[in-house]
Image (cartoon, rainbow, N blue to C red; front, top):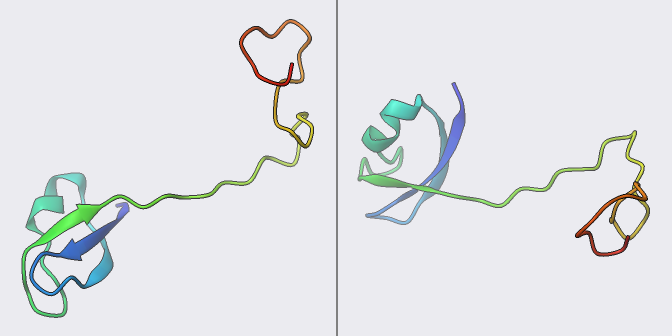
Length: 70
């Protein structure tokens, strides 16, 4: 089951919970037992070790169309 991030509507407590997709609407706050809503957080991901792009991102292919930096 995936982890989702939530915020309590009553006390504004932010927390994560491992719950099924179908059970997201029934999650309650572990602090005050209030109703919670799912929040969406940003994430970072690293380029893979085999990445062929340069420091500016862009494309590694000479036949690319529409990329900035090609």
